[in-house]
Image (cartoon, rainbow, N blue to C red; front, top):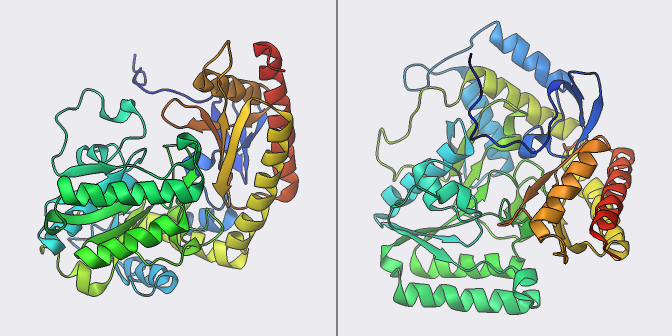
Amino acid sequence: MGALSPLLTQASPVRAVRGEGVWLVDDEGRRHLDLTAGIGVTSTGHCHPKVVEAVRRQAGELIHGQTTTVLHPLLGDLAEALADRLPALGSVFFSNSGSEAVEAALRLARHATGRPNVIVFQGAFHGRTMGAASMTTSKLAVRAGLQPLLGGVVIAPFPHAFRYGWTEDEAVAFCLRELDLLLATTTAPAETAAVFIEPVLGEGGYVPVPDAFLAGLRERCDRHGMLLVADEIQTGVGRTGRFWGHQHSGVRPDVVITAKGLASGMPLSAIMASPELMGRGFPGSQGGTYGGNPVACAAALATLEVIDEEHLVANAAAVGGHLIDGCRRLARSHPLVADVRGRGLMIGLEMAATERATAGEAAARVLRAANEAGMILLTCGPEGQVVRLIPALVVSTEEADQALSILDGALAKVEADLGVA
């Protein structure tokens, strides 16, 4: 008999058979409030009618058009739609997954600059393929057993003020000093192609990058001729309450990587750069069998239309603010919550360790209690100690309040079980 690999781990026991908006229905007919959106993928909600119709229509016309063999019209349409949202970076390469797009951005950075090294930050998640895994330090599960990994990757400290126990300004100043030290001792600027950063640290703990830190990176990249690459795989397409996560800071990256919420569940990713920068890559260095698939492109175009028509970026900002405020109220009455942080609909609650459980164990208990009450959550952070809320961008204030009520009950149950007063 066939079976799924035992190496897959599940965050919930739910066997989903149908989805609508922010709700999933399991094989017993039970409804679950989905605060995961497939790890930020179903941006327009599960099975949005406009996306479903676009997929259905395109599947009846052309399912596969391999982009190095033939072109199909949706490639240009989608590239133009993305360029409208980031005019300075109007040259687009499409691939399937976030990891694949990171690999393409890494390749472009090395080709375009002629430099071998890249800088990434402690706690970053850039993917699971070899190059992307070499750039990932969110948790050991991605890197363990793969050494030696790709050379030329230098890891710098991330300004995680809560972890350091400092103010944000102190964390930014320290991490910029340490970055300058790396450039003076470990990777010479003349050998450093790019700096890769997530505008909100994702798997590493849902920590927004301080605007001053991004500004400091931009200044150093300009000074040393390095590229600034924004990994917007999880933060892009409206997730943080702006269309791109880096837009909160006003800092302009040289390359943007996008995936996850771009096509509402169809596999599609992309890197965006200026035509001049993209043209400095090696001819033939970009390609792939399925990248830019017509059905996935149709889903992405429909996704962008829905985001505009239903004002979902503004909804992410408004409902996200409501959720963050609600989580902070919960934190005041639940000692298990040590910190609340996030932007838009990308919110993390860091759990505190107790005498009877580590912070990671406490977070896992909260997930189980929420599952029992009909809500699906995920964790992140190096110990799995952060409970994260990432509903679809269509989530309503009423559904957010339902989520807060369930989370309140789950925290209370875990605190009672652990004897936390």
